[in-house]
Image (cartoon, rainbow, N blue to C red; front, side, top):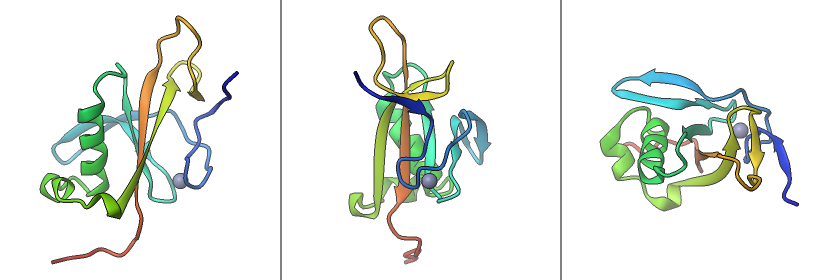
Length: 115
Ligand SMILES: [Zn+2]
């Protein structure tokens, strides 16, 4: 049996609140921010991962879409988890249960490379 645990940051293990609706610059999505500067974005359908990744990277770039598009995969890490909105838990879903996906993203270095 796969483990089911409360929503927790995969990078620093901080317990996190349920994703909330966020309006940031031109962005609208459901997610949150961890104290370790990782961010997370919810994909309610679990089937819209491309867009969810883009939202995550754009939010990671503080709303700068162009910067997000030009992020080097070496500069950040992402983690994709099954998420149950009702119980605010992550882990594998049970048969017949509808789960969302949640994407965590974090820049590997806090140094900003401005060019
Ligand atoms: Zn964290």
